[in-house]
Amino acid sequence: LKLCLRVQMLGIRGLSVGCNSPGLGLVGACLPVPLQAARFDQRGPKLVKKQHLIRTWKLRPGDEVFVNAGKDKGSTGEVLMTDFLRNMVKVKGCNLRKLRDEDGNYKLTEKKIHYSNCALIDTVLRKPTRVGLVFTEEGDAIRVSKLSGNVIPWPDKKKGKDEPIEHIDGPKDTQPDVALRKTYDYHADSEAIRLARLAMTKYNHGR
Image (cartoon, rainbow, N blue to C red):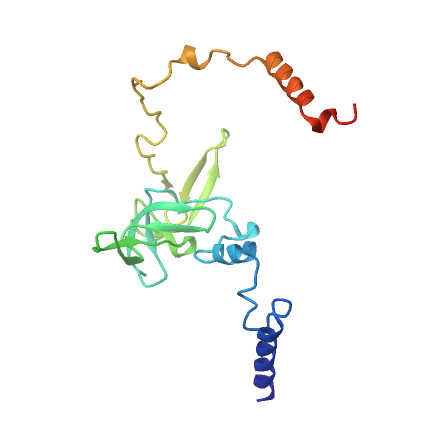
């Protein structure tokens, strides 16, 4: 009881004195703007500390994995994306959430799950297995199944992701020879700056 009365008195004292003594109830409101922005950035999925980042990822988008923990335990799905900063992956059909779009309709979308909750499926035995990495002389990594000893190939990259996009020049596009034309004269610009400084009283004061 004494502690509660003490807390109430501190809050009232902060209201009566002003901003120098904000009281317990006004501490959060009196925080400067950068601190409030930092608190806002902390919400949502937290970033993993540097020492806890996974150095060698064995999953890539396109792999078929088995979920061994969580509400979707026992289900399988395809890896849609990987988040290296949070050690999380997004599996198709797992950890679904209902979201409302701009039109007011509800739809299901996948949320991320932790990397340790997924196990890669052996392509031969069709069972979840642990995976080891073997590096070749060229530095390429090869995934080897701990269950069967077979090599699990990496998934193919999606077409068009690394290929350059073809661009057709339009009527408003600048031609390369015009864009590469030299139009800046350093000597003329430096002379103009010197004359402008001489005309300003800030530089010629006392001469």
